[in-house]
Length: 83
Image (cartoon, rainbow, N blue to C red):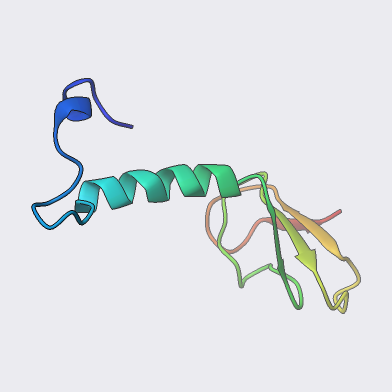
């Protein structure tokens, strides 16, 4: 997040466009907010979708025998389990 000093530094350039660090700041907030949503796709996420532990995923096709998965371990594309 931003430090006390950064609160007083301009967040836009001379043309009124947001600075890169401002864009990155809001992207970080957006990722945190969206971390509580359920991802979705067709098929199992195992070996396909990288995510953080506790992420939920819904298989819209239901073809792998499960429709809901939770990311149990790791941050790569493995560690998903069907619920």
